[in-house]
Image 1 (cartoon, one colour):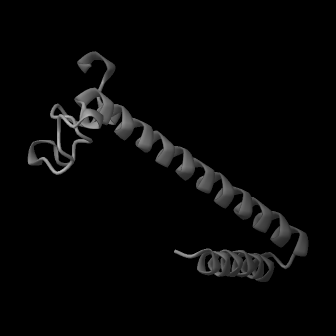
Image 2 (image 1 turned 90 degrees about the vertical axis):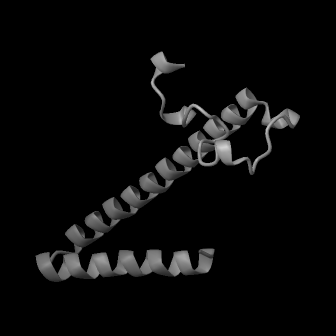
Length: 100
């Protein structure tokens, strides 16, 4: 999704939220406060998603290093490791500490 589309959707959401809260409560201050809270929650959600993507990338990088894919020992298209981040024993990001 391009930034322009995202920006328009974000403003549409915030304006619609402000209008709906104002129509329901009749208070401009309530509308502004709930819009600010909604904006803050959207920002926190975005930040959490960025952290999650970084964590997944770290796990995938660690899995490639432990299987030797960086040294050419395994090929990325190998069907034995498809969908397992390069590990034949499962996804390293979701394993228990005891199983390592």
